[in-house]
Length: 269
Image 1 (cartoon, rainbow, N blue to C red):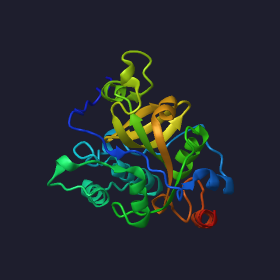
Image 2 (cartoon, rainbow, N blue to C red):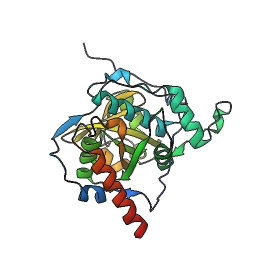
Image 3 (spheres, rainbow, N blue to C red):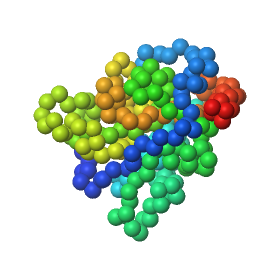
Image 4 (tube, rainbow, N blue to C red):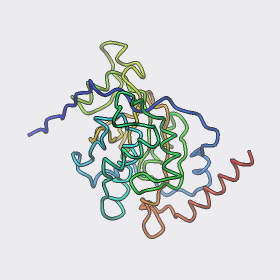
């Protein structure tokens, strides 16, 4: 029997990711990949394979516009499930981080305005989210599919901000596959006609990506990512390291040295 699609009432959800902020100090992934000798990248992979579709949890995102922080929680799940025992952050920990970063007050939910993705990443690097702190993050070149695939495989996923079209709401509640709509109302296909959102991409195969959003693992086509994504980041974390290496063989000491080299280059530019 085919599994019935889970439907979500989105009428009370506004948005979560505010427009992209440009920061010249942000590392560019191309600088790291140029320095690093890369392992062979398989044609398909999914870091979420050890987590059942209904076990991700929405991290509180269906009630509060904290998608930018929910991605961090889902990252921790993907990382830890692949180096040992799965750790699922509590909703309270994600909310605490969001409240600190965005100034959200549970007593005044009507003033929930979301927050920029890069503010979450900077906080995550300097502080902790759900007991985990990242080493660094780096931005991908826009529409660079090769970098996207490399990021997903090498670092256990990719942090992505999208300007969702209205058509994504219907697709989430029916096909569970975000594609560029080929017909119907043109306004439903316009970028941002629904709202800004942040998701975790955990896998890929051919022209499809596997993403985690609102507690479910669904499909996003590569064309959809290329059309509606506005920011994509590689995230480097010790939560994805075991015996000084990631499951894909990236050495943490080499990684730290490369990051230090990039920092010096940035400072001198």
